[in-house]
Length: 161
Ligand SMILES: [Fe+2]
Ligand SMILES: [Fe+2]
Image (cartoon, rainbow, N blue to C red; front, side, top):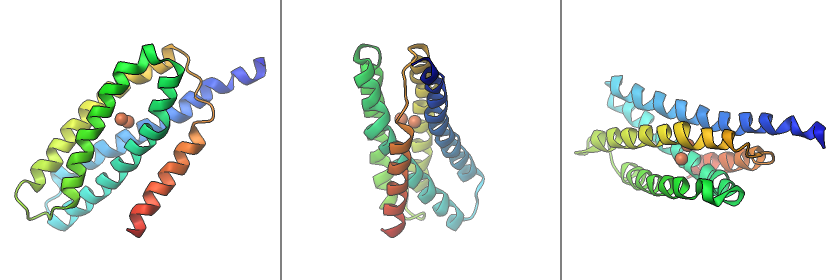
């Protein structure tokens, strides 16, 4: 149906836009942490960043990455394998941070390294993965809603924890 074709780019814009918004928000938090002097504020930023990054990695791992692998395993397989390993490193640091207090040795170092890993990972997604999705005209219709649902679940699970 020719009419439906026009929805494919809109879906790409919606899905990739949502992920890019998350990336910008994470980068904003890492930057803000650097200028925050008050330990209570720093802790708030770390908590917020950990929750947001946990939701983001979950959204990608449960929906976006498997969808791309199904769509074209040859094109996306190795990029997604690397992305998954990078997520695992980030999740490990997040788990450590969530068990720490701001006064702990290496608290700041953990968050700084998480920021470096995250920036590297974001760059790979935005410079390699997302352009490939656009290049290969992958039809992302139907992904936005389950991604939003997972975000809501992840955020409310955290709020009630
Ligand atoms: Fe991402
Ligand atoms: Fe990712």
